[in-house]
Structure formats: C-alpha cells, structure tokens
Length: 239
Image (cartoon, rainbow, N blue to C red; front, side, top):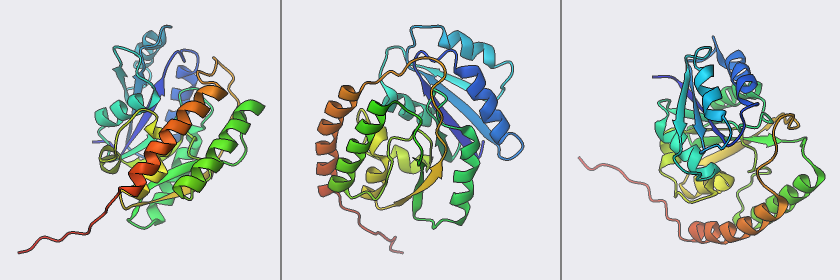
C-alpha cells in the first residue's frame, strides 16, 4: 500500500492534467511511496481521454469517473474512498496549487502532535481575480467568527489529512470548505501551513462570487448546528 494518496478532483480541466501530473511526480517521486487518484466529475470535454493517455507515463495514476456531475466535495470523498494510502493529500485540478508544497505538509506532520489530523494549506498571497479575493476574504471572516475554527484559509485545495479521520466526518455537499471545523468537532486538531498560490493559466473557473456566497451562507448555518450538537467522549476497554 502507498504511504500517501494524492486526490485530485477535476471537471473540464483537460489542459491542466498533463502538467500537474508531471509536477506531482517531480515533487514526490523518490521521496515517498505514493499514488495519484484523479476523480473526473463527468467532464464534458475530453479530460477522461487525457487521463487515460497519461497512465502510460504515470503508473501511479488511478482514475475514478463520476457517472453524473456531483460536485467537488463528492469527488474528493469518492477519491478518498478509493485511495489506499493512510494519509491523503488533495490538490485542486486547475493547477493553482503547487505540488512542490506537499512535502512541506508531510514534514509538518512528522513533528506534530498525534492529535493533529489535518494540515491545511494557507495561501498567504492569492493569485486570483479581485472579486474572488474579496469573496473569499468575506467568507473566511464570517466563517471564522461563527465556527471559531482558528483557520485563516479553508478554501485552499492543498491539504493533508488522515484518511480514517476524513471518512468518519459528516458528509454533505461543499463539506470540503469546512474541514478544519469538522475535524475540530471530531475532537482533533488542525494546523495551517503557508503555501504558494499560482494564477490560473489554462481553462476557466467553475465558480462565481454569488455561487460561493449564497451556498456558503446556507452551509455555514448547518455546520454551526453540527458544532453545537457535537459530543466527544473518551473511552477505554474494560478487561
């Protein structure tokens, strides 16, 4: 079994697939035993054909395909379910996350307390449009005040987490935006690690400012309810 599974959700990202796979290999090959699980969210372009062709160059590549479009959170979850590694690294498929930052998260895990189950990338310098930066700043501020998850940037696609912990979290659409709060609810800790961020150079963004805002407000109320109803109880086996 690999030590690390890299999960990458994609929808219509055919031009970003080959360069991102090459960067993942450059960052990890020879350093960690890894696999890459791409989840094609029923792309309408030829992303799936590109992925199949890339397997000849990347034997670590595995492909999961959605039969109907289901969104990023579902793609991540299905990728994690298919993954064989005990630890998962996630990347956005648009190429804005730098795979060279994955080893930084792995190094942080080596010295962290056992209670830390999530290492979240923190984009200290955003390379997005003005509207995208403003909407993320507002969302992060509101979320932080309501959930008190002590995380400056939950929207970064670059994360490292324990597979077992992730699969035990409550599942719902858009849950990937609330992983620090959900991990905290489960009784564990997360840390934020500064990482790079790059401008999109191929393809187009799939989300707009209003999409994130209105969906985010509804989700935030639900996550706040989950946090209030959480109960973590220590146990021991009686012999």
